Amino acid sequence: LIDYSCGKHRHVTRSTFSAELLIHGDGADHLMMLAQLFHELAVGPCTFSRARELRDTGEWQVTLILAGDAKPVFAAVSARHIKQPSDKSLWVHVQYLRELLNRRVLDAIWWLDTRDMSADGLTKGSVDRAALDEIMSGVQTVRHPAESWTAPLRPVAVTTDPCGSAVA
Image (tube, helix red, strand yellow):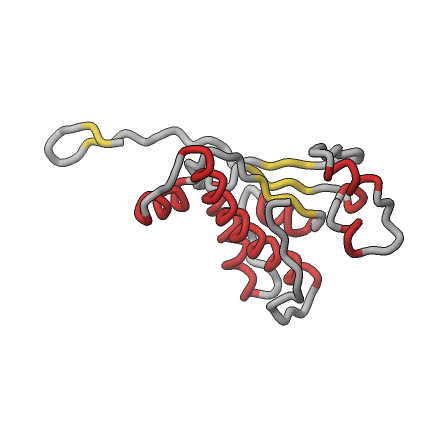
């Protein structure tokens, strides 16, 4: 076990969508902290400025995938054109996750069937614990249909500065 979090939701919400969206954002933030930890284990200590650069560019030595079982959150973040949610205050949270994906800070977002969510085995009494035993051995098997989304690669635009030099 590397890290865990236990506690109540820090936000007051009016819908399941908003609760799931906000916890995805919190999870992404926590994931980036763990990415920095693992990056430094792999390559050694970083200066504060290098750590900030890694956070902005996602150039850690680990792959970051945000996974959850909230299909509406997955759909909102991965939509071709992000639409403003009915609760307008949530729009910035959808944009935040999309920006992390577009900038390759997060490599992908996954939607998993609730039956494949290992955390449910820790919180729900009727869930089979076999998946937890499997995870503790270092393996997680996705047994039900799932979806993954990665931001499309954008070609680097080359322009010319006023002096005539090519600028990427």
